[in-house]
Length: 145
Image (cartoon, rainbow, N blue to C red; front, side):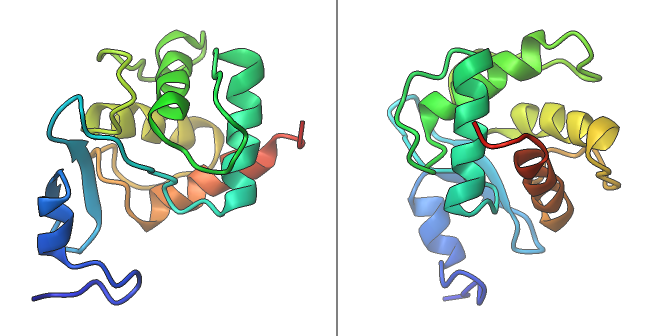
């Protein structure tokens, strides 16, 4: 069984766990198999970075969960509201506010990161290293609340 050496998770295990696909590069294409699926998708953020995101979406986009550094379904619902409604959003999110971090959520996030955080990669819906680095810059660009 192939292993991703960075995190020790097998590709087969990711697929069995509800992820729809894994890119050939090993980067997870995050999309879940159904509404009952719940997962944490921190996109490379450490706990403190994820807490900063949660504090930011708490004040602006209706996040009502714990500030625990775990970006789960409720965190991503608030992030989708941001990506859908923020006036300067370059590629507004058009999907349902469901908290599922699928390709549409990632593409909208990538467009935002490209415009405001120096992301240089493709708007492809794959959360690779460049997307994660830019998301980290976004998390730490806001002062801690």
